[in-house]
Length: 383
Ligand code: SF4
Ligand code: SF4
Image 1 (cartoon, protein in one colour):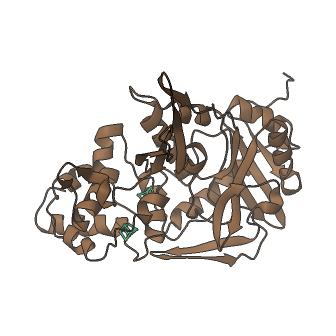
Image 2: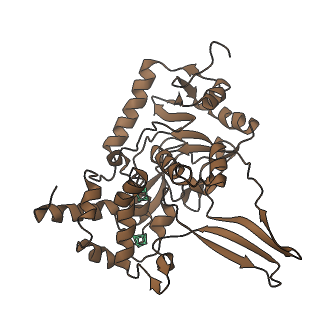
Image 3: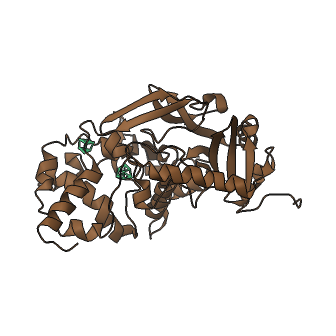
């Protein structure tokens, strides 16, 4: 190791014209690079091969039930908030085969899936999304039963976080303590800086692998003024956040209000379409389906994302436990904001705002919480 090598905690400035080297260095190390790109009028996370694939000069407008891309006046590469995709599709795919079964003269044989050794580099992971990844780590690897496939895919990730220079119209990560600055869980974290005709990235090193990659990219050590400039960008983003949610005592508030009339109110609007669960970066529910061929000699078991908004999701002998829209919305919101804390020690909501933007009728989790809290307090309830 040369004495000039970067270490965890170091920071550097990479000029825009050298930023493309990141792609080359990661590709040389065998990573398949995925990142934000414009697809069908939205920012999608897909395979990218150079900075040309990034959403240069695009930003987004988001509100309850509304999303549109529009042009920025500059050439920012990460000048948008989060879109409908989350990163989990790369390490926890929406559909995957678990194993095959073959019938032969001795009985049947289970054929496990080959190990997935693909290495992904994720470019552009936001602070709220990093927290969502750490929450899913807890779900899949933190307990008694570890998901080995998830664990392997997860250990192969290289994460380039991007601190948010733009607050989305439906974001409330500042309220949830998850953003807009990435605090842990990344290999490299970038803050994009565009001012006075300059375009560069303030880069922080979060791991030894991140330090090795940064060593190969032309850069200079960051100065105190660079850090202050990056901090200013993040402070402004916090101030401009589109939504807030009062998270104090939220678990207790919801536990005391299982019969609140707001659940009936939201049920008159909710379509039980499941969009909110499909876009949520922390949702992890799945179903398992078995399929056979016509000979009966070959069968496969598949795992697919599922949603607590589906009637069948709570089906047990005799019918579905949550047969009404009211019971399904209440289950989803109280799980995210209350029972999740009992299960995993923290909230299941990271404040990304996707469920608000992509709800076709614009149901807003922050407004539902506000309505319950205000009437609870007005009725003399415990704050
Ligand atoms: S809250 Fe909105 S997105 Fe979620 S199930 Fe209901 S209508 Fe669909
Ligand atoms: S519940 Fe909504 S705001 Fe919270 S993490 Fe999920 S999609 Fe984002």
